[in-house]
Image 1 (cartoon, rainbow, N blue to C red):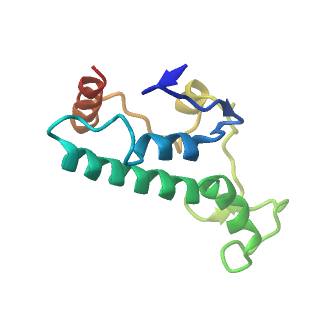
Image 2 (image 1 turned 60 degrees about the vertical axis):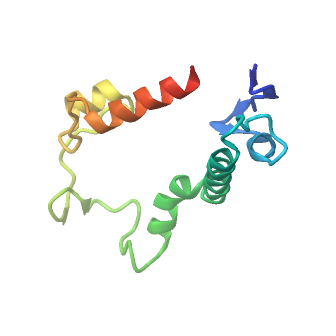
Length: 136
C-alpha cells in the first residue's frame, strides 16, 4: 500500500517500522506535496508535520514504561507490589472490587472506576470531518 507514492510502513507490535524516514521523505522540500500557488503554506504544513513526527518518535514508549517507572521509584510508590493494601480509589486499603477482563465491554459493565460516555464530542467530529475532506 502506498501513501502519496511512498510505501506505508508495516506495523509490528503496535509500532510503525521505518515510519520516520517515510514521513520525512513525504515532508521534505522536494516532495510532490507542494500545490501550485500554495508553496509557502505547504512548506509551513510540511514543517509542522515534520516537527510532530519527530516529537512523537521521541516520546514513543513513554506511556508504556510510565507505570513500571512510577512503581519502581520509592518516592512515588512506597509499598511492596505484592502487598494486601493498595490505592482503592479512596484511600490506601484493601481493594474489594473484582478485577474485570481487559476489554472495553467488561470494563464498562464491571469496573466502577471507569466512566464511559457515548455522547459525541462535537469538536472531535468536526476535526474528523475536516481530515476526511482533506483526504478527498
